[in-house]
Amino acid sequence: MELLYALEGIRSPFLDSVMSAITELGGETLYMAAAIIAFWCVSKSLGYYVLTVGFAGTVLNQFLKITFRIPRPWVQDPEFTIVESARAAATGYSFPSGHTQNAFASFGCIGAWTRRRALRAACAAAIALIAFSRMYLGVHTPLDVGVSLALGLVLTAALRPLFSGAEERPGRLYAVLGALLALTLCYLCYVELYPFPDGTDAANLASARENGYKLLGAGAAMLLSVALDRRCIRFEVKAPLPGQALKCALGLALVMALRAGLKQPLYALLGECGAADAARYFVVVFFAAAVWPLSFRLFARVGGRGASGGEG
Image 1 (cartoon, rainbow, N blue to C red):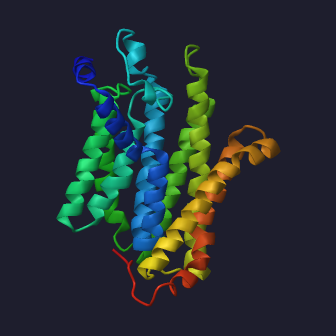
Image 2: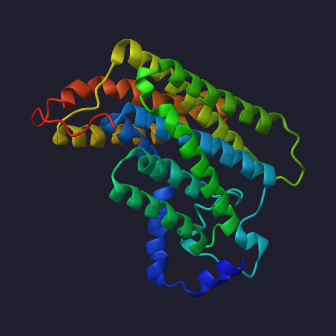
Image 3: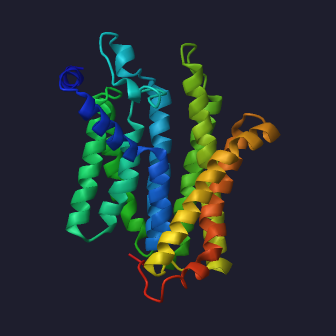
């Protein structure tokens, strides 16, 4: 807590605003956007890589959170204060940091994939700033952030070789995605069947289960989408710059609309249960990976014939 108290002492309204903006770079929405843009515009292999590192990291992160059940810093020490604007998003247990984990999935994978030193340095700086922002805002301890940095580094380095030329090795890709689904199922069995102590926070446990079902639906959609793409869709990531921009702007708007708009209808139809959460994320990921790519030939004709994206 000594470091957090030291950071508390240098806070100012300006720094609070800057760090609040930086910390959003580690949120789920930006991670989804980064993975989708990579998949649609740069390289399918890179897209699979970002998605797999993010999903595997989330499963491990959620497992550690619900297993150790470490409270947030201001709960551990009532004398400590946080930046109030960060409180609403700082739900769940503290250890380890989910935003830091997401930062590695978004920026770590891109940095590991690219050969450009400047881009690698920018990605490393983004990860470091996001990790620092979580401590500055007072929502995570150095232990929370440090463990997430270690997990992110291990996942990014260990999975990188599996996705080099992944599209030419479908067996390897199916095996990786199948292992991801198996990991998710193991996690779900744990949070559904393990007799957690009576003191376990009910809201945190419900969130851990909800996230497991979301990942199950998303993982199943990824596996199905890979099979469909190889057999019949076979979309190309290349398009002129105006086509890429239009493809991403319209596609991301539709993905985010589905993600937000399907929640209440599915809850009304299936009840507020895991099946509804799994169904929602299955539809969202399937749309992004298999439905929207059907339109990519149209965007390849927008703005000329020069391509601005390609296999990395």
